[in-house]
Length: 361
Ligand code: UD1
Image 1 (cartoon, rainbow, N blue to C red):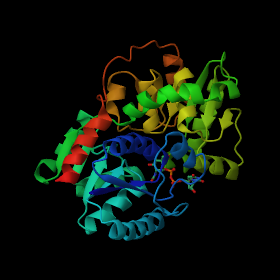
Image 2 (cartoon, rainbow, N blue to C red):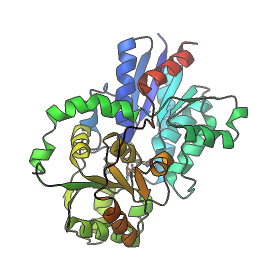
Image 3 (cartoon, protein in one colour):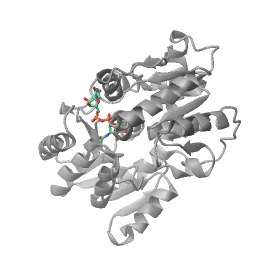
Image 4 (tube, rainbow, N blue to C red):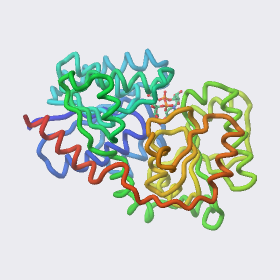
């Protein structure tokens, strides 16, 4: 039987892989071998996703984490190559823009294994971001580039992809399928709204983890001060990434917010459904807010998801306290219609169709 190797490492990748793995298993037309690089390793950053979304257990866990970018990526390339030499897959599947993504791409390309990049073509046009570097390099050596939006297709055309011999297709954004499918389960399984006593109190959902925000202490302070100020009016629930928690502790920074440990996907879906608004520097959460009909304040200087901003569902405010507070005041009572379809339909199946054509050929 033909075979694909899927490389996973970070939280959003687990969610996207859950949708695709389910389809691959059901169709049973080729085999999938899952490799976990170990980039995210805490139980609530990793295991919980595999358990509740029933992602097949990884055949390999490379256990590579908590290292500088170069060491992490280097070790991943080495170990993924070993796996590819054993498994001899017909293609490798990689998601998004993490160090695990670029490592998988480089290892596969040097072995002439076809690369399928899901979430191709996104650009922030900010070369300071590790994710932007990962995206550009990964796209350039991928064979099948599956794009979530028209903007992603246009970005690739601008970079000359029409002449590169790779197949570039718009499939839509796979997280949409995840939100639709797993929402049925989260309602039944998640107890987070009761546990945090949020049934009657309106709340804002916030997450902060990007290196560009966490590694600049002035920015970090400004962001957290604004969240604290917002929480005087509406409480702010903040599932905190270990990176951010560590930096706050190292700098003796303490804020009066409802800070909780990172949550699994079911809990996140329930928080999204029940919150009033989302404030985040995450890429994934921006669209998950949209799918759950919530306005999103983006704590970055740019976004790859420009259609959200263009259509009035999100605002980019950076890390400046006054801008964050102003945006909150401006949008806190918004009642928007979220009926526009920005990210496609049955995205998992569209991706599977393209994948199958590549693998079975
Ligand atoms: C990574 C991705 C980012 C993605 C995000 C999703 C890169 C360059 N960045 O960022 O694109 O949006 O995942 O969440 O690949 N840590 C723990 N426990 C964990 C995971 C991380 O303590 O389970 C610590 C690490 O030791 C490290 C820090 O958090 O010190 C950052 O982790 P890292 O994997 O480098 O990047 P993320 O910020 O998670």
